[in-house]
Length: 169
Image 1 (cartoon, rainbow, N blue to C red):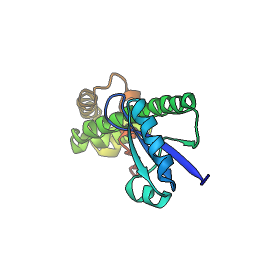
Image 2 (image 1 turned 180 degrees about the vertical axis):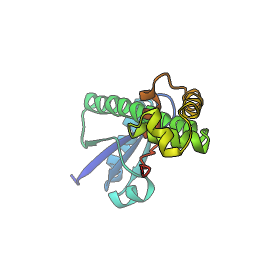
Image 3 (image 1 turned 30 degrees about the horizontal axis):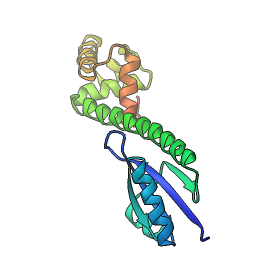
Image 4 (image 1 turned 135 degrees about the vertical axis):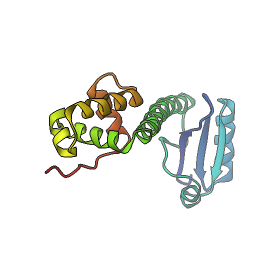
């Protein structure tokens, strides 16, 4: 039997998956597609790995053919869990980007310095503003980020991929 492989990835369609089947033999591709359909999923079939690589990036799970039905269902369950975690992470990052984008330039500077461990007094010195003004910018920034603590704000900053460190005097 020729080398065969199947991989699964989660679609953004509730509990339905798209199963990507790779096998040189049309018979095995058809059998795999029928098995995926029987489990309530969609199947995309490919004659070789090159064709698969041209159509999609990455996979969340792999299973070698021939496979047992219980093994196939287990891999799908694992993939579904991994896909949920990745989707949650993408949502957090997107929300973080949106929150950080809502900050004024000065609020962003305050958050950047805060993320570097600066106190309000140090931030005030660096930005050449009063500590009270820092407190006002910080309060506005916290409200826009929906942060209850400074650590929440810093987490949002890093989730948004903001890692630039300002040069301190």
